Image: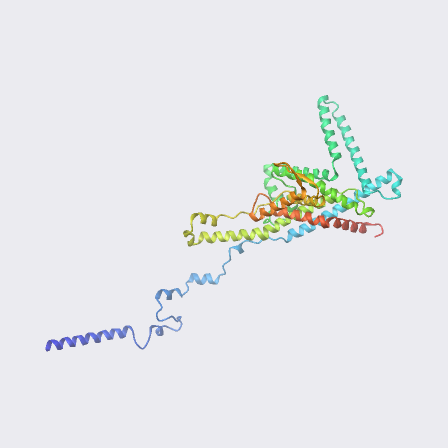
Length: 435
């Protein structure tokens, strides 16, 4: 009995001690939440220590929240198009103003020349055809004078060499004389292009030529829209453009002449070369502007988005789960925006005008199978290739500039002759003696 009572007493003491410690650890009247200061954020009763620590911002987080983080795309200044648009408008107006002024000067000159030769032109003004025939005869006399001077210069030379030089010169002079007026002008433009091409071959001038004779949309320069028209780095590029310009530039000039003849006696015109030159410059500026706008508003945003996506993929831990081929494809550097150069845009405008003005004409392919096709089918094929090139992102040619030139040519075929007649009539009214 004594042992049993002793054990029961010990058991009771252990239970009392256990209850005492339990009440100390988990008091029934207050929870741990209530014991926290009011300045602490309220958390749930069963919130773990890790989640409680995550709700408290660190010093680095507070600094990052207080500073606005600049996005990747906002770090690049967006290229503008305003200056280039103004340059195109101002350059085109200046080109046509000069062209109209020179046309009026030439017309007045040849009109006075014919009046001094015969009194019959005092009764009526000379026609366009009569002034152009007079110009042809004057050019023939000038070339004959050059032949006579060359004979005198080579008088002391060996006979065989002298005859060879004279024969080559006479053939070249005769070809130049018989060529249409528009083709002679295109040959002159090709000569300027050739001179610029030769400057490209001087290594010391390469940085200057790259800066001043190529148009880069991200450079901010506007004058290169004009200088890049006459710039060719590749001989094949120069040769192809020269051949196309000599052919289709002559046809476009002939079309301008035919349209001018419809005005009758109201606007006689001794030459159409100034009209074509203004058209050529304006078409080149417009095609370059189209390429510039496409690069700034289409290609540049795509480039920034590609760089942004590449940076995200490279820095993302999930990229390790992607196959190596997919990662390389996604993180590959996007294609850069390249500078443009060449007269292709202006030539496209001349080709389009020729195709619309002479729909029955045939053109011969300069590559296999060397067959003749309708000119409108050829132009349509070229336009389709450029559209496919834009969709497929081909970079060998400036497809935007080509389509811009074709668009300018189509618009000029519809409204260009009337625009030229309007500018000439305004010039005549301003400079008429009664005004």
